[in-house]
Image (cartoon, rainbow, N blue to C red; front, side, top):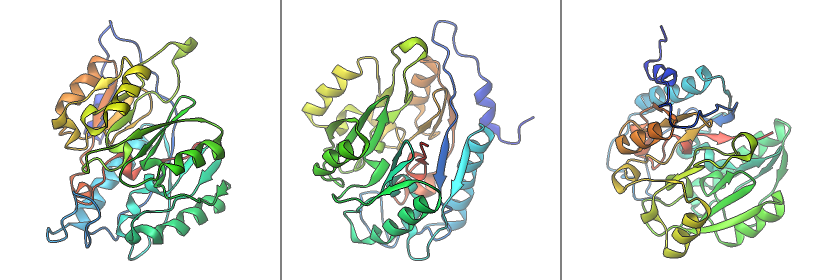
Length: 295
């Protein structure tokens, strides 16, 4: 019997009427939250007066790490740096496609110390590192769906960074504007469920998103491009339900996003609940702690 109870869910059999989802191997970069605390406020989730429990954050983070490993994914680690409590949110450390890593330029001063450690790590591990010009916060605001990059703006990443991403990676970039300060990064309002097309180019419900996090134009773009997307309600969005990691079959998700979990099952995905409630005090969840390394 598995010692990881949530992984028992991965053995569930989808309803026969829904498509069989295929798990794909992933390589992730993570950082142990050894210095995690909330000593400043740079997003609506952070309350410096509210105590944080670093030991609890470490236990929850370890469960996420172990879940990835038990699913067969590779997890690389970057060393945490004292004085940089948000380094655990590795998704903001860069954007990596085809072995090329675009570094970040944080908007907020409190996180700028993270920029060089991430770029140094990429360089030391064989990635072609591109020094950023524009202000942007990595995979927090850039999500790869097939050959297209969905790019967020409105709170952290400048719109000019979207042009930079298009030039660096030679991909189509679709700009989306966030309007709710609770969802200040794109990866808090969109979950990429199937990053690539299905067998034979079959269309799949590639993403899930929270319509209320976007302006009218962005909602229209998403509706046109992803007509079969899962639309997540406010209650599930507010518990960072969309801040997930998916391998195309298994979706690591907050246990509090109960409606979204039911929607995932209906579409043939296998939700695996991992609670990162302590790290949510810093404004980050599952995806925030997970940077995909695309070789």
